[in-house]
Length: 129
Image (cartoon, rainbow, N blue to C red):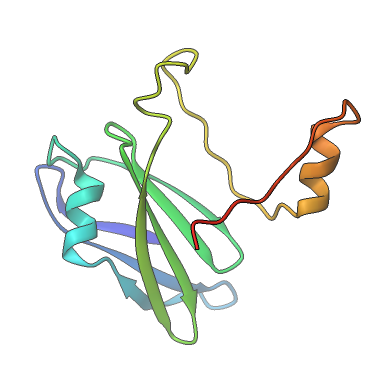
């Protein structure tokens, strides 16, 4: 569960909780660092709602009205590791339409190879490292 604390015009923080389905009890497991909260707010500095996607131990969130930055959180060993990436699609002149769709799931290299099809396409994993 993710929750924004404060009013849309004056958000104080964003917290994550783990919910035990059997008892509906909950425990706080994380809180967003201040610098990432500012990135999540975006240029409008207003945060009325966010989108949250999860897969395994990862959570991804972005501001629906200003999706320039995607905030990510890895949950494990009783702690949260936070980070962010620029949403490259937002200012891409090649994009079609005004909508963005995000999804979350486990994708293996084999899945990507099959998706590329038999048309002599090649898939290469690149790394900045």
